[in-house]
Length: 351
Image (cartoon, rainbow, N blue to C red; front, side, top):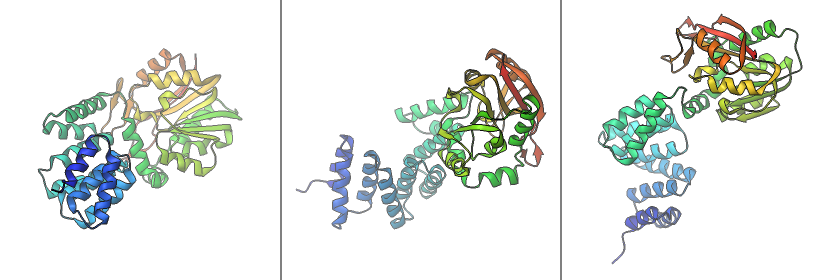
C-alpha cells in the first residue's frame, strides 16, 4: 500500500526536517502528482525551513491557480507575513476571511500581522475572540504589553517608515508642511551662534531632511534610524559620513557637539532613556536639539499614535538626566488635518 505523501510531509515538518519535506513535495509536483493540498503543505514546508522567498513564490502560484479558495489566500498571506510585507499580508488574509469567515487560521494570522505592524488594539480584538490556545495567549500577552508600553512599538515604526520611504519627502513637505528641520536650525542659530565644524548625530534621520538643514555646519554627520528603507534614502543623498539602522535609545557613540531629533521623539512616551543616552554622548559644550508635540501634563499618546509631552515633563526629565534647558520655545513641526500641530522646540545642554 502506498504511503500518504501529505502525511509523510507533515511528519517531516513536525520532526524538524522541513527541507526534506519540501524536496519530496516539489519532486512529486514536478512529476505531475499532487494538487492544491500538496502545494499548500509545500508552502508550509518552505516557511518552516526558512525559505521565505521560495514560500512566497509558491504561494503566489497557488493563489493564482485557486483565486476563490480561502486557504490559498491564507497561504499567500502567511508567506507575505514571513517576508515582512505587512500591508499586502493583511489585505490577503482579509480576502481569505471574506471567502471563508470561519477560517480561524487566517484570523489568527491577521492578528499576528496587525501585531507586527504595532497595531496592538486590532491584534488584541482578534486574539481575544479566538480560543485561548497557547499561541494565541502568548500573542495576546505581547499585544497587551505593546499597548501599555511607554513608546511606540519598534516594529510598527520600522514598518511605517519603510512603507512611506518612497514618497516621504513629498508627503512631509508637500502635504504636512513639515518644518521641524528648519525650526531646529533656527534654534541652533540662537543657542550656539556661529559654531561650525561640528560633529553631529541625527537621531531618527529618516531620508535626511534634518541632515540637509545642518550639512553646512558639520565636520562629521552621522545618522541612525529604525527603518532600513529610510537609511537607504538618506545614503543616496551623499551627505552622511556614517549611517546605521538602530534604536535611538541605545546610541552610545560620541562625543557629539550636536545631537538632533527632528519629529522623532513623538514615537517615544518615556524620554528618560533617550535623554540619558544624549547626556553621555554629548561633548562638554554640546547641545541636544529636538521637537516634540505638546501635552497638557506628563506624556500621552495622541489619536495619530504619536506621543505628546508637556513642558514640565521635558524640564523635569532633562534635569534628572543631568541636562539643562538652554532653550524651549513653542513651535509647530507640521500640519495635521489642516491645523498646525502644537509643539515645542527644545535645546538641552549638560548641567
